[in-house]
Image 1 (cartoon, rainbow, N blue to C red):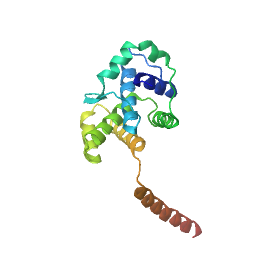
Image 2: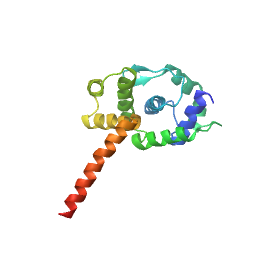
Image 3: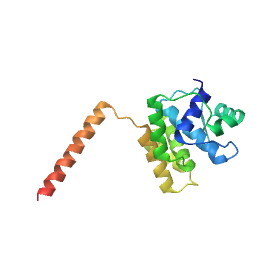
Image 4: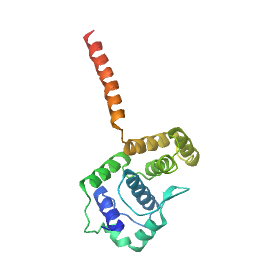
Length: 176
C-alpha cells in the first residue's frame, strides 16, 4: 500500500472527505497524518514545523494532484486493525477540530521530534499559538498526550498501585 492510499483509507475510516480548497481541511489533513505518524503508523511524508504546526509539502502535493481521490475517499486499500484503532482514537479525541489538531500536533512535534520536556513544549505551544484561548491550548495538549502517551509496564504498575489506594480509601469512607 502506498502512502497516498493509506492516508485516504485513514480519512475514509475517520469519515473525513477532504476538500483541498478549504484551508481547514488542509490543516486537518496535515495534522491528522502527522499525529498518526507519531502514533507509529508508517508514512514516508517528512514533516517540519511551520507557523500552523507540522507540515509536509509532499503530502500537500499528493492531495492537490489527487484531489478527486481524496474528496471521494477512493482507495482499494484497507487499514490494519491497529491502524483503524488509532484512527478511531484520534477521531474520538480530536473530532476533526482544526484548532485542537493544530495545537496537539504542534505539541507532539515539540515533545517527540524536538525532545522538549513536556512543560517546555507546553510553554512553546502557548507562545506559538497565542491566537488560541488558554482553554483550547490545554485541551489540545491534553488530547495529544492522551493519544500519544503509552505507559511502560513500570508506569502501569505504579498507576495500578495508586488507583488501588484511592479505591481502598473510597471504600473505607463509604463504610463510615
